[in-house]
Each structure stands twice: as structure tokens, then as C-alpha cells.
Length: 450
Ligand code: PLP
Image 1 (cartoon, rainbow, N blue to C red):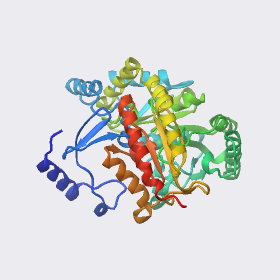
Image 2 (cartoon, helix red, strand yellow):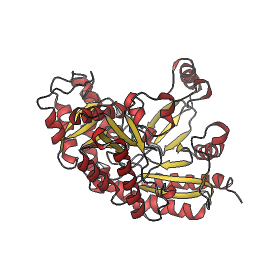
Image 3 (cartoon, protein in one colour):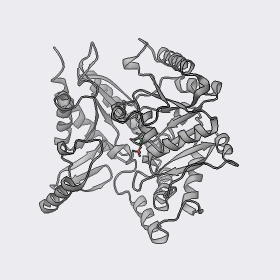
């Protein structure tokens, strides 16, 4: 990549003057101008390259500028750039069929949206219409999107300034073995106590008022929390017992992130609705959706579904979705993720946990891992406080800076670094990136008490 200071200055100036950024105090940010990318790498205008260990916002499953996806978009643009949702379209139909083929159980219809938040909005709307109930339960430590109901469902600080935008939401604690809310000491105990807690919440909120329980199959931004054995089965059973719709939010973990088309496939459970976005087409064109069970779809056979979007099933978004299926199958992406996760990532992260006093726990599946950093391994005090910003967040900022300095773009959230590279990353790049993280953890070790 060539240095291009003039372009850099222009991009920076336009951005600072006119682009209003997400979730930020506008005067306190300094977005890095990006000139291009390929595969697992992107670069700025000054010639600095970064290994993308964050897959942008964990959406870039097939990496930057995948030729098959780019070609699919180009060919679709040349053929039919757009068509409204009430007409039938070949790529929209093909993508829906392919998603139905890999979805579990009887989930076989797809409602397409523009992204993840609206997928969750519409899933909840379907659940409310089908059950005639209003309330929805969701987890603390979750993210479900930035729009009215999705932000209310969200169980992290991003909700605080936006509530109550949907008053019919109640939150519960999900399993989190490293910081068990119930003092559990084994995964089995954690699962059974988390289920007992959820059952109590259902009882106290009133089962007959609850339309849906929504949960991320593996909690993403809030910690890569892999549910202990039996937990999701227990949620399924509880929902069945009370006529509650089980919505699995797979916006972050669907489409190969954990080595399955849908993460629920790994756990052998079948929700009533699955929401997806991000990895469906690596975010090359905005796309999300809801995969719908036959039972719920049947409700809308004779009753109109009250919802829609101008761009539902946009052909320019669906074409790279179809190409995603072709690439996954041809290149064995799911097998690759399982192999790289268990053979390359897991042992190296476990070695880091042994070597670095700042590493409290590593956990994950496939190419989706968290390194949870602590100030004190005995008390498990987080390296930075919950919801840290500014000076409080300095230790994590220092770890991130060390990664960037060495050419790796990390995913940092509170006291955790996540490992979520594109699924097409080469083994050499993966090893190099993990080595950079290993070195950067020395910075975190410097904050460990005693
Ligand atoms: N659900 C989960 C689990 C997510 O991780 C996200 C985004 O990060 C969303 C929903 C919201 O998706 P979007 O930003 O496309 O609206």
C-alpha cells in the first residue's frame, strides 16, 4: 500500500466535519481513515497494515474484498439492482431456500430485514402477534440492537440512555461460569441454577404475560459466554411448558463464526425464531432476517403480518448471501473454523492464560473467543471497572494500543479482548496475530496487583 497523505487528510477532514458517528461523543473520537483491505488485512493511507482480529464488527466472516462476493454484487447490479419486496425475485428466493436448508427443525421461512436490530424487532412482533402477549424476557449482558425494542431488550449500558423505549421487557441473568451469580462451581451447576432463576423470573413476571424469551445463543459483545451443557435445552423446555416463543439471536454467531451455520446446531436445540445479519453476506450490503418455524409461519397464512421494509430481501444484498453459501461449501469454511479454533486458537489462548497473570479466563468456540483480563487473579477483580471509559479504561486502551502498534486491530469491550478474525484468515496470519496478542498481554500484566 502506498502512502497518500493528501487523501488521508481529505478523508479525515470530511469525516470530522460532517460524519456523525455511532455511540460516541463526537469531539472525543478520531476515526482512522481506511484506504483498503483484502482477506484478513486492511490498511490506512499511511501504509500501516492491520490484521483484522475483530472482523470489523464481527460481520466480515469471509474477509475483505472476497472475489466471489464482489463478483456476485457486480453481476446482480448489472442484471437487476433492486426490486420491491412484494414481487418474487430469484436471488431472494434462493437465499431463503438455502437458509431454510441449514436451519434446524422446521424453521423454513425467512423474513428479510436490513440488519440485526430490525430482525429482532420483527421477531418480537411476530411472537407478540402469535401469542397475543406483550412481555419479552432478555438477558443482562446482551446486545440486541439500537432500535426501540432491540435497545430495550439489550442488557448492557447502551440501553440506559434509551429507556424506556419498549416498556414490556424484563431482564434475567444468564449463565456466566467465571462470575457465577449463584456461586456455582461446575458447568452443570451453573446451568441448573441459571434455569431455576429463569423459571422464577417467568413465574414472578407471569408466564401468561410473556410472549417471548430472546437470547444470544452465545453471548457476543458482552463476553463470548458459551452456555453450559443443558442450558439451552432447559430454555426450550421452559418455553414449551408456558407457550412462550424462543427467539435465538444469532446476528453475531450465525453463519460460521462458531463452526456451524447456526450456533444452535452446535447445542442441538431448535428455537421458534432465529434472527441473523452480519455473516449472512459478511455485511458487504446491509442484510438481516428472521428464520421462522412452520408453526409461527402458519399463524400468518390467513392473518396478515403487520410489518415490512422497502428493502426487504434486496437483491444486491441477497446475491452475496447466495455466494456466501457457495464459498462455505466449496472451501469447507465450517470445517476450517472448527479445525483452526480447536487446533490453533484454543491451545495458544490456554497457554496465554497460564503465562499471564492478567488473564483471568479464556473461553470460546470456533473462531470466537474472549480473553477476560483481571487486576487480581485471586479476587477476579476486572482489569477495568464495568462500563469503564476515559481514565478508568486506560489499562485496556494500553493493551489495544500495543496490539495496533504491532499491526493487529483488536476487539475490546470493557475488560475483555475478543478474538474474532475473518473465517478465511490463513493459519500463518492467525498464529502471527495470536503472537501479537500474547506480547500485548505483558502490558496488562503490568497492572496486576502485587
Ligand atoms: N444482535 C446481536 C447479537 C448483535 O451482535 C448485534 C450487533 O452487533 C445486533 C443484534 C444488532 O445488529 P445491527 O447492528 O445490524 O442492527
